[in-house]
Length: 296
Image (cartoon, one colour):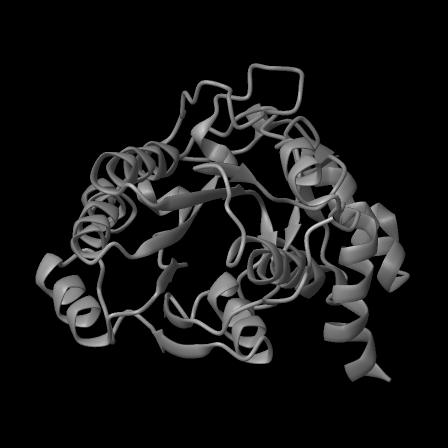
């Protein structure tokens, strides 16, 4: 088993520090003792090439961790240019700047690069085929990174939670606590990911160790969105009758979602000898810390 703690202090540039994942990466990197430069969109807009160049040339980090992304799946359908500017061409800009100085990049992608046709968990070797603009923009970013960088790691993850203002639990819990009935689809299956667990895995395992160019990291286990909502009811001791089961075809989504986009963690386990926590454990831990402690 590889050691879970950093063996060398690095100078790290974190992009997207104000995002859902970026906030947890910021904490984990600080706790690990690395020299950290953390920037939000105002500090570095990766969609603008000269902005990337300015930041990378001035800081000259040992490593860039990119958590900057356009993540609004629905609005990406009508904002294709903006989604591709950040998720696609932004990676071209970043890769070219870093390659000039031989700087390694860790970047985050998504399960939505897959079409969801497979009944099995998707591995790093499966062929992507995104169904929506968001997924297409993220796949294009992966391709740009592979084209312009020779030292990178793409972490594919899915259904990240960890911010009550932006994530699925936060939206569902707000309605549950106000006793509003909600409709949740039961025919889309995913592997969900607690941002705190993902950040800790990246900082403890990926920074100091050689990794493949693509690696899946999620919490263990798979779940439908409807069962996800029912689990939230159970943790909060809320009436499950408030959660109505529906089909995707009953909803008015602009973006097509894959029916099954579950990611396999087998390669991660094989490389590092550790399992990610189950989604049940992580969700309960997050809800207790975020909601139940405040209530108490």
